[in-house]
Length: 264
Image (cartoon, rainbow, N blue to C red; front, side, top):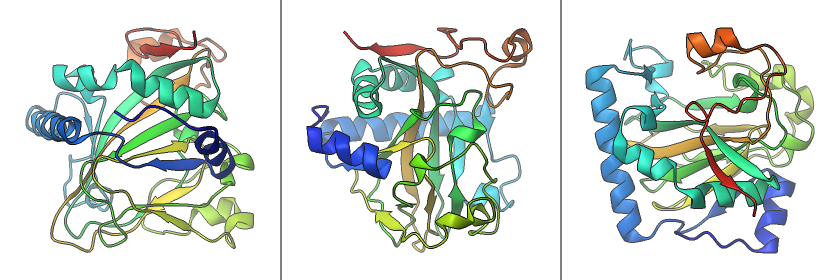
């Protein structure tokens, strides 16, 4: 795993809100991530033992991607991958924070000829607000403009608020909330298999349609800076835990949000 960061990479991430680290996984690691992700997704779709968006496979959103959330809760192999301290260290050093907790992992598999992913922000969906929230997006297949690679509006994390839109039919809906971003030139983020894209939770991003007869697989994880506090939204929090919280409480439940890295 390529975990050493240069000063230039850190500066680029903080300026643009995203960075591609090529060959983040070596060939052996990539093979392992593929096998585990495929098995965890297969198990989730068969057993329906957690969060997935495939209750109606013909719905528009279900054809944007197959989404399986918190696979580490139900698959031991995925837990091994996601709890790797090295992932938290890279995320924490890019974000410039002292500790990283997992918010949630999720597999995002764009199906053959799948729908585009509309412009959106990530962090406003979650149960905490932080300008330092960060995600990793690992390409398990080559991600290209043809099969729906990520696209970014560079620098938007600097002016973003916590307003957002859902991932719906209309690609442009985010610009109703942020009209000042409509003239920013979008930048594609093609990533060959084994590469990792890290992005800020407030940077605007999207993905094109998959115009190929093959799926485009990615395994991702959203990270929460240690010390983040509850904002009143449930998102993926279990009902009992959600009901126990009040706005401003520190989200430090180690079972729900494991601390995977702390700065020495």
